[in-house]
Each structure stands twice: as structure tokens, then as C-alpha cells.
Image (cartoon, rainbow, N blue to C red; front, side, top):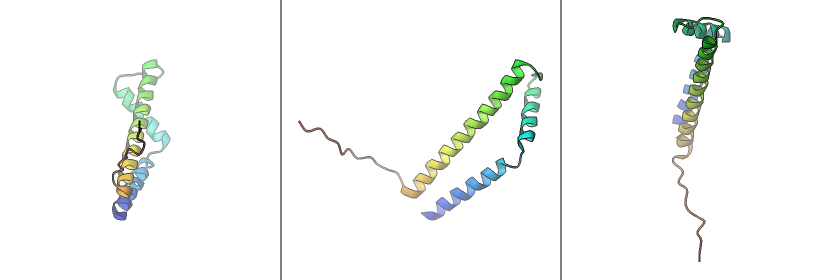
Length: 91
């Protein structure tokens, strides 16, 4: 049971290290290039919105990956957890 957990942690560490290979400045430049490739011009509301949407998408993807990883770790540690109805009303 511990081996899948170690593999999950190693995969997470590798994924996090891959995220750190690009500096914030490099990421911003890549995002700007992406928005320029869509036809937006610097200094416009559309350009700012494009950058914002890229950032929001990146954050949502990060949250989804984190939730998936936590779910996987919980499953590896405990297996499925089944809630039993312990509170019954007696009339």
C-alpha cells in the first residue's frame, strides 16, 4: 500500500519541479506571445482579458491536479471510505 503512495508523491514532486523550470518572467512573455498570436494588441482591454483568462485557466488546472492527487493519495492510504448510517430515528 505504501508503494503507490510513494509513486504518487514522486510523480507530484516531478510535476512541481517541471512547473518551476519557467521563471515568472518567461511565463509572462509566453502568455503575451500567445495573446499576440490570437491577434490581440498590447495595451488593449482584450489583451488584458486574454492574459487574465490564461492565468485563470492555469490556476484551475493546478487546482484540478491537486484535487486529483489528493483523491489518489486518500484512496491509496485508506481505500474507499463508506459512511454508515449510525443516526436512526426511533419513534
